[in-house]
Length: 253
Image (cartoon, rainbow, N blue to C red; front, top):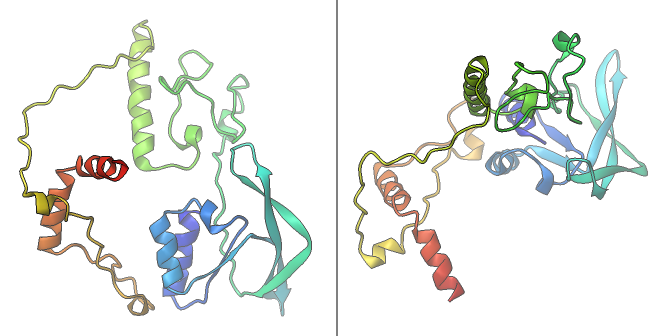
């Protein structure tokens, strides 16, 4: 149900496959980006919710079917997410000649087997102090996916910057406590003055997209980009981020 699953499904569909995604929770719990899910559905990719694969069944020496089981959500797991529980006697089969696993990931910590005192979280990632990226072993710092689990490059870079600052302080015998100072603006930007009627007509423009029927069999860019006029209007709206606050105040009044 994550972005990797959606990417794999949309790629396979473009290569000519008929694709079905099996996900053990509902659409509401899918961690993938909302727009990606909707675009996949628009392209005709099927999604079997509340279903988990249990077996790959061979036919004539190769994959022929996937056996799956229906699930229901009962209570919550350790991460606070709705917990999927198998429904007895609810197995069903889907014909398939290819299976693409796209499930959760965890770091390979075999290289750290000698560091027995490095504590791990329930997700099998390294436990660190969030502000300093320091582990419980003095002088050992960690960041990125080995701490957060699967994340983005930007998140890993941010962790690296925090860890570098902590290492710098540690090597000099200084406190690891981080100092926060407000950033002063380099120059004042005058507010954009717009007529009242234009202020309240500014809304986020819909991104022009390639029609779903034109995406099959190719990897053309789906999002076509704004026209010059749309880009200018979006920039005007962006420079007036206080408008949403004004609208909220007016609606509550």
